[in-house]
Amino acid sequence: MVTFMALRSALLLDESIRPPDMAVGAPPLSQTLHDSFAARRPYFNELITFTRQPAQRGMTLDEWRQPVVLASLLAVYSDHIYRNDPHKHRENKPLKSLWTQWYIGLLVPPLMLIMLTQPLVPDLSTRRIYARFHETGRAAKFDIDTRPDQATSRQSPRQRLEILWRGVVAPLVEALEQTGDINGKLIWSNTGYLAGWFLNEIKPLIGETLFNELRQPLFFDPLLLNGDVNPLFRTMIVRDGLLARRTCCQRNRLPGVAQCGDCTLK
Image 1: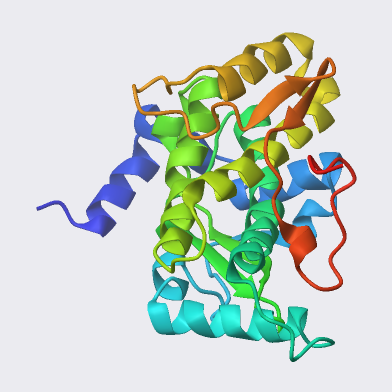
Image 2: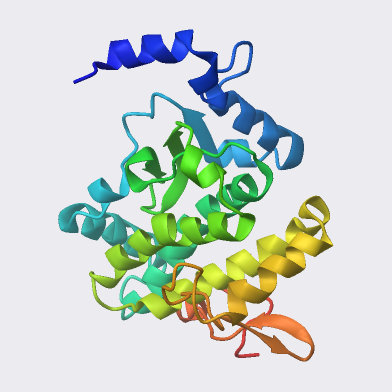
């Protein structure tokens, strides 16, 4: 068996097989991604740290989804949400909906930006993503153990986004569904709303042609390119000539949490 050191030596000696992230004089992928955020969305660098040494206080999905750990995080979050109404009946479905909105809301837009703008993208498998949680129990920021993903880097923009849904969001949906109280469709609905909003936000950056090429299959194709069911299918619909979310996220059922500005209940 070829040892790691032997393989590394071969990569350093053979220019023809050296991956782009190891090119002579090129900054590491972590620095490239940091600089890209700094130029396009500086605050993303406050949400995601690209590193080869994730903070010890972060947890991968396989770690935080453990029943005892996740139950503890949700209990702390519930105490925070109901802190001013301690005797009110606690509703777990809207609570978990809002908890997941924090998670995907902080993580997915930055990853979409990477997938749609960077020639070389990082490995986004769940073992590489470490969530750090706020004292209130919800996600606060993420560390990504940054290693190039050559296979995904060769894919089309649409394929890259579908890899993001399958590899990053789907495991989150599965983890929350297994706790009960919430179904995956509601979490995917939240994700679709977020994806539609951010795609529109970066339209000037990616161009109208790519924007139109992505929006149609994102919400109106029932299947992904690999034949799987598209989890974002009709999470957004055309209403009054505009793309709007199909269902309410139910966050307004929580004390002190206002309706979204474009809530479907209005």
